[in-house]
Image (cartoon, rainbow, N blue to C red; front, side):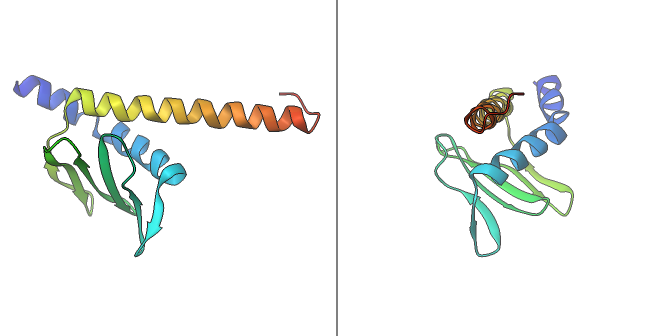
Length: 109
């Protein structure tokens, strides 16, 4: 159990990067924060490097990072994987849209 928690915790920098990518595309500005409340599995609030991720399945706050300090960390491997997969899907959609726009303008990649 402890081994699994440490392994998931080691993914925190990657998770934070992925979360930032998602928020830059899907988050909306509210009261000086980027907020994502429309997610299927999570609610996210992010302001700079600080963020809070809450599960919609009743588990509550899964991860809270403030001033570079991890205050709450209850992410499972499945949670980290789910966010990573969402970023991959988003990046694929963005790349496909860019290729389509380039083709529409007569340019090829």
